Length: 522
Image 1 (cartoon, rainbow, N blue to C red):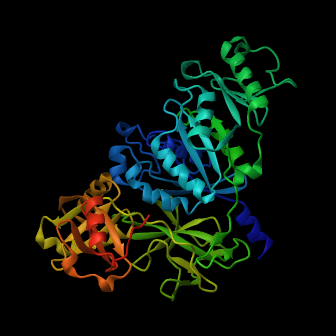
Image 2: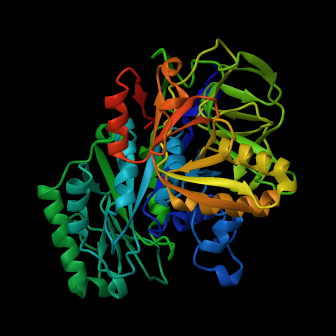
Image 3: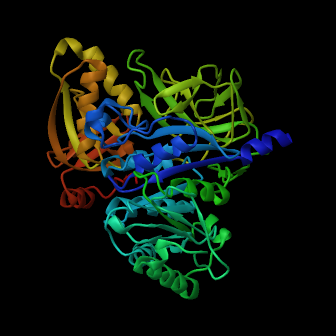
């Protein structure tokens, strides 16, 4: 590979932002885009009455509710780096989409609300990062509001998440008394409100050089004491441990007030990993620079442009270089074709892309060729490791209110199911449609999108909570095994699936039919 390609790949930084809902994830994304020059005016998630919506919340339902329910992709250049941000859904009902997105990044930024500390959804997402050994950078947000003590939050990171931490900077005060951050790494103080310089220099003892009102406050004194404690008893900074996901650098700031964000971005780009090698199903290592073009589909999104009813497959480029018009092979089918309609993103703003390299995310126009997890290559055929798929827990029977709209009904379901947020089942003889999901909100989004994007009103009848189990030896299954407590259905690939009423029904079935080998997804 050429030096030019190697430099391009090494300049890439691809990360996801993870957090509990309302911790400030979308706001931080907006401010990063602002610094990258990708947008001129940051819309906030809260400001619905102003008509300004966050760039990454592009779907109509997101604008109405002020939540992110899809993973957005945004790209910008900053300080010699090409940054790809994947803004993920914070709501737990969309954790499956988030988990798959985490398979497409090289690092993660975890946002924690200073008042609430580490919340349930943050723990879940952190575990996925930990499982993959993804480096994690922590941004403790909303320091201009009253919250938990910084040392308490550092303890939470270690006790609740089991990861060691290193404070790159430290807050001076909090809430109405928030005065700024003491930047340990860059050896300077960044005042929160200032008419003068953005940074204030420290002397050789680590104290503010010269006279300043801040030095007369107890908050400044407390910050110095805390930092002395961290120097003596805290963890040492180690870039190797950061890259292994064993140590998280911690930054304090306020995304809404646009404070501490640029300092975070500059430091993050210094230490975040460039595109990393990936394993195939055969456990071969695919090197980003040495291997010809390859990538995998981690997301499919229907109707990003409602006027054209289009569908986009999001591809993480793992190795080599993409050139528009190049020939590739879809490993699952062995089918070869030319990649001509390709895009890059700023949320729902798209532009045709002519070239991209390992670490970038591109969108492929999809007419039904792709499935989540598909591998595409320009060299020899192989497949990357499978992406996680979750066993749904809630089920709904779905019908079209207007029988004359059956064609639109089935088309809408087929396209939305391909996105992976809901799963499709049908009963054996009547072929009634049953949808499965991890959470209730997914059904609400499905109903909203069917009406708004496909002009179909649907009737949804709860089937309730079920335990879904697939069957290894389908040939031994008889229809007579199906009952009110163990409904037999088919999934979208025509595999047989039992929907059990509860744990007792599952055990009873296994005791009665020991020859049937059941299994679940994740």
